[in-house]
Image (cartoon, rainbow, N blue to C red; front, top):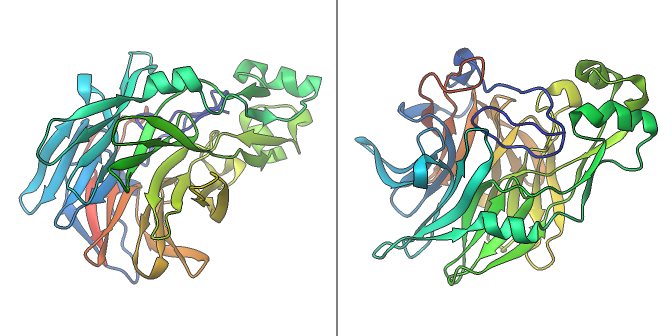
Length: 366
């Protein structure tokens, strides 16, 4: 099943299921919380998809404005823009002060016409790496079959209007996150391609991991909500993984948040996950699951991993192998842990089509 939430355009798959709008004006405001204190530090963002930091500052990739900005005491200072009025999604900065950000340019119908990673040295000329051509040429998940394995004739007919009960990985690129690697290299999480890509200092692209299918059993309630017949009840539908963030842990493993394709509401259950990916073989190990709209991760002290749940209205934490709620927060998107505090971006209020009608926030939580 394919879900394309307005503006976010996160999920992958073959079925154009019901669109889930982003949080309303009421739910997008930072919520009062017991425990950690939430302080709003900026009110001018629209869609702060990803946050990153260097030694002195927090950076924000705002998909609503197509801008990468530095957070200062006087507000956001733009430092980079997506080409051709495109969408910026991922942002990272390495130890040399080199800035990297991912972007997507779309046609009026939403089709990606260009995707890339722009690398901007601290004292040098920016250059971009073409990610869409790589996806079109290689399509790393083309050998993976999504949907129902060996569907019955009834199931085939039921899913035909929605794109089919079974399909192989499609050509689709939406580079949604990036993180620095040693040797002036970068790891990119492509939410459309369902993979992690390495871009080395020469701009060469290699596949680090094709993320595994995300199975979900279709319940009677889910079938009824999607208008599907009884023959699909009990079937296992294998959704696309859809990586929404990637961070590099101290041991070199990749920590990745997943927002599987299909409806990201409770109709099919809270299916998002956080996984650890071995950089040597690309194998993924699940660290937490049951996320409702897993959109980001941040690495904290003492091995803690924070994760945001856009549709769950909260930020969680994995601590000593166990996941729990850290703080309730409406519409959380990007996260980064900086100078003893967790910074989070929140999605602003939207109209019925999910388009921003007002600003979101950047908050500091400690």
